[in-house]
Length: 233
Image 1 (cartoon, rainbow, N blue to C red):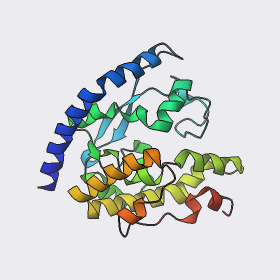
Image 2: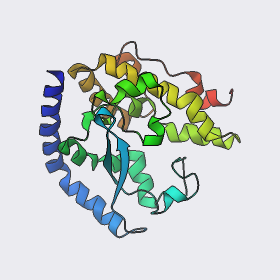
Image 3: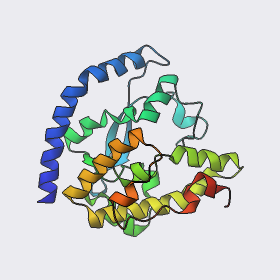
């Protein structure tokens, strides 16, 4: 029943949302078309429902050849591969809006675990891999809320002369996995509504830690996943 209600709500609210934001989307498309490299959309393979890959839609925010430049699949704060318009789109999360098409198609949900790159998915434990995508991946979710400052954390670690890939393996992936396991075992319509509320709240209060008050028993973010804590590693 939960999955049926959720899918019905996804379709209704996605179609309504798409109608409302079409004028805004057209403005973004125009900006992207006439700035930088003129790229509008970016498609990338991600892990989906029942561990089956799909192509996710995003507004283009990086140079065309970015996967072969610099940090490749790893993005840091003020990454030179990010375009000027793309920087704004990423900070405000507007680059994620085209994923509403993925929701309508059935690839994604409004709320769920973030769809990972296949290589990133492999970094999770078998226990997490077995449950994470029994739910459709979401435009927003616990990983998106708790790791809003992910690029800043990785950048800070790198500036200390340390390997950012190591940071992902030792600290980011384990906690993200714990969050996704929590969501799998606790997901409900009420939890999804709370995550949607927290997503909008975080847009105006980016440093808020209210997520831990609204969602009880959520795995607490360790000190190693804070800017101040990184210096102690």
